[in-house]
Amino acid sequence: MRTTAFILLAALAAPAAHAVEYGTVLPKQSSIGFEFRQMGWPIKGGFKRFTTQMRFDPAKPESASARIEIDVASIDAGSPDADDESAGKLWFNRSAYPKATFVASQVRALGNNRYEMRGTLTLKGKSREMVIPLSYQPGKNAATFDGRFVLKRLDFGIGEGMWADVSTVANEVKVNFRIAATGN
Amino acid sequence: MSAATRYSIPAIVLHWLVTLLIFVAFPLGVYMHELPPSPTKIELYSYHKWLGITVLMLVAVRVSWRLTHTPPPLPSSVAAWQRQASAGIHGLLYVLMIAIPLSGWLMSSAKGFQTVWFGVLPLPDLVEKNRELGKLLTEVHKILNFALLASVVMHVGAALQHHFIERQPFLQRMGWNRGHS
Image 1 (tube, rainbow over the protein chains, first blue to last red):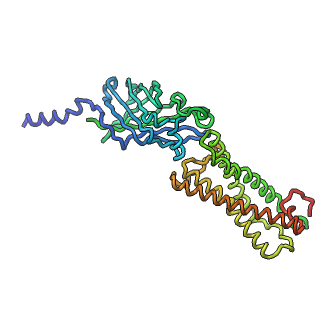
Image 2: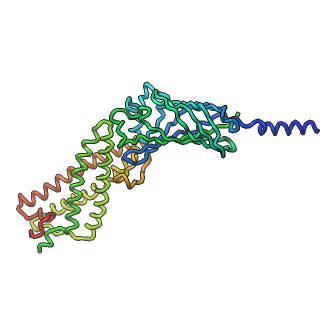
Image 3: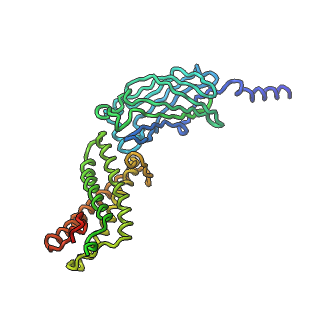
């Protein structure tokens, strides 16, 4: 009896003993959105299809890894007309650059379930180092990782030629994302 | 008697203000919709929408003024069928001056572009973003504008006909000249 109880206890205690490492992403509960100003007014959009590979142990952020690959064709640029226009050479040049990627290089804890993620964002073939604040929310079924940052579209050549004029379509794009993941 | 041959000052001011705005918004709409996407196109669309919503607001004022103020009677020389036609065209003009900006507003929402009056007053999107609905409302907006064009031609034609062919003093009804009888 004693041995059985001990084994049961050990089994129950096991998940707690090894901190959860999140690695299975739930695409339906994950999202990537953005917001930019046009004629001074915010327009919301996002990407509907992207894949995320990640390993993240809140207790060991330094060993975390993440790679997000976005299908540029899944863009919602706020309107069907803008979706069509965004595919063109002056914007995302989608036929030449169908994917956008983010690869995390370093994650460090800021305390209180907040982290700072550094990584490389590659859009339209141009790569830029980004520093993204992340908040981690443990959940019953899945944990969520929320991040938001601002990028300048012209850093990536998003909107060339006449669209480089930022008085109509602003240069700053607020990006927000949520990655939901379970441990495995 | 001079007062009875002329619309009230607010009615006259509103008439010409709305006329001016429509005469800018209409050709602007004809011109801009053919343009390839560009920042200029985005700006022109915004200006067009601001004009249209301004017309909608002014017409709301016009309608309430018209309902509470009797217009000057038509000269006795105007035939009965012309009186009926006049009432019909005026009614149609009012309907179109409301329906056209409204259809533009809805079309804009369906196409995913919220209308923000002068960049400061966001109008609610009354319909969902929907490509097909956007196309449909674009057609509606266009057809209503053709109807407006035809109505304005008849309206102006009738006024000019009464004034210059029938030689009845008519244009002063909507004129600026206070002294004219």
